[in-house]
Length: 172
Image (cartoon, rainbow, N blue to C red; front, top):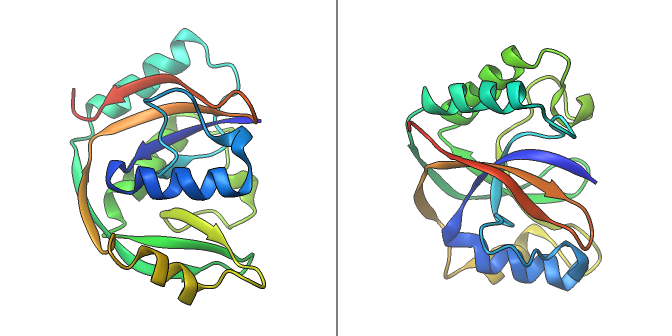
């Protein structure tokens, strides 16, 4: 269980929600605002953020205008995580850097993927039955997708208790 700052990607929500259900229905949120399909800005985030922490995030978000991304290239990380690349990456990376500057004690993915992990939208996990090719085939009618990322969520991820803690509109 942990908190995540994430940018929901509504055009892929139904697909990712269904894949999440396929693996572990406990991580399918009953909160209709929850972004199963998302691009992570920072994970993990502060588990129990103070009002000052939330105000710092709000300040960063208000200074960040909504931005358009394209999600179309299916790729796989060395750990087998099948994902869509975010193009261009600059706005997501900038938002992550701003959050890290405000919260210098935090490290993206606890350093597992290096100091600046690639922005992405997780789709699936490689296995004997799942590959980039099979994932591309399942997504064939949905990607590429171009959308505007316009909301940041502080989401809590815990089996049986996934929900949005707080949300902010970018540039507001």
